[in-house]
Image 1: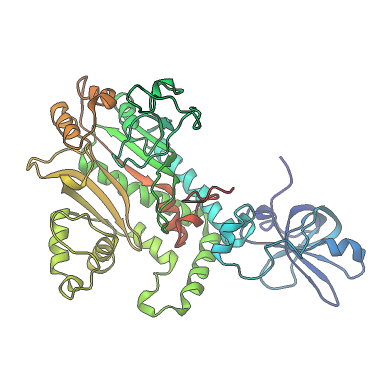
Image 2 (image 1 turned 180 degrees about the vertical axis):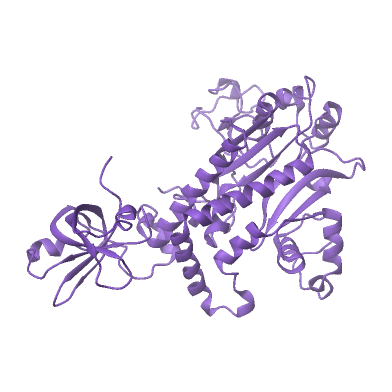
Amino acid sequence: MGPLQIKDLLLQAPESQSVILKGWVRTKRESKNAIFIALNDGSTINNIQAVAQPGQFSPELLLTVTTGSCLKITGKLVESMGSGQAVEVQIDDIHVYGTADPEVYPLQPKKHSLEFLREIAHLRPRTNTFGAILRIRHTLAFAINKYFNDKGFFYLHTPIITASDAEGAGEMFRVTTLDLDKLPRTDEGAINFKEDFFGREANLTVSGQLEGELGAMALSKIYTFGPTFRAENSNTTRHLAEFWMIEPEMAFFELQDNMDLAEDFVKTVISYALEHCKDDLNFLQNRLTEEEKSKPQNERSLPLLEKLSFVVDNPFERLTYTEAIEILLQSKPHKEKKFQYPVGWGIDLSSEHERYLVEKHFKKPVILTNYPREIKSFYMKLDEDGKTVRAMDVLFPGIGEIIGGSQREDNYEKLLERVHEVGIDPETIWWYLETRKFGTAPHSGFGLGFERLVLFVTGMSNIRDVIPFPRYPKSAEF
């Protein structure tokens, strides 16, 4: 089972029992009376302090104990004399697994910028900030799988290589085995994909939703949780080229059921993180407060734990897109021309509009429904008025939309009409259309970008900092 982790050792009662510590040195401090080594193994934000006596070890050995070096320490667990920790280890023996030359090791005990840490993504998990983020990321992923399992959903693995474009976005990474130096051509001069591995064009998936719906039409309730890819040339703090998506699809769920599930889902997984990541969240909250000290009061974020409680403790306000536009038209920022983007029925709401509704108007998370058909995807169920669709977006403080979903169009003729309308060739999704011919049923689902959730829960401001190895334009280094 390996050695006891530092997380567990810190909880033990100190009885001078023998313990073995393994981890990386965060700091080493020498005074007249003792040598203090702070060790961390990634199991917790908290270091354990190990103490040696002056002269106990050779100067040559102590010279190799530097920030970043990896040690095995054998000693006794005793009550700590210093403040800040209940226990510490009296060192009997030090074994150095690996050294880290302080002249070249980039993570010295000082403040590093997030931009700099992105350049050393292979080492940044060793920092307090990224250790905390990655532990929270794990906890949220576990909570998501647990939530759906407990609710009777089946985990469906949808394809990563696909020939369909679920979003109609068109910005996809192409998958091919063709020799790019001598591409086979048709008589018309186009690339002949019949000679490619799959005998047709193929891409990395932008969403598992369409295949997820096929699963729901047999298993009733499924969810996907997998990587998705968008070839958008977006250099922003909110976009990644590779990210993870959670997409539940449910047969016999209508719009109301879909909203209930989305609300319960985010509240449950955030509560789980609040319960199981207290130390990491406290650390990130303090980090955020420190970061924002220089900002004027009105530009500072809510304290992190307060923001998370804001979501968990409030019932989500539900209203239609049309009602939301009315509120925005009557709002002070609109009347005083403070909004950057115009407001009017038919617009795709921008993040500033969404945040106004959540943070200023309702002061609670919001679910907007029944959007104009023109700004939503082809698969959403048409409302009776023919102008709007049964879409729903969940809006959070600080970021705006976090979940997008809808009741899916289950009528074959109406769906086919929409497919033609948006210019998709029905032949490419014949299998999707067929589910509306054979035992069609009302069904709904939604999508949540996992990194958006991690961004929200950690209080970080750049999505590149909540995934271990971010992919974005001109960056696939690690």
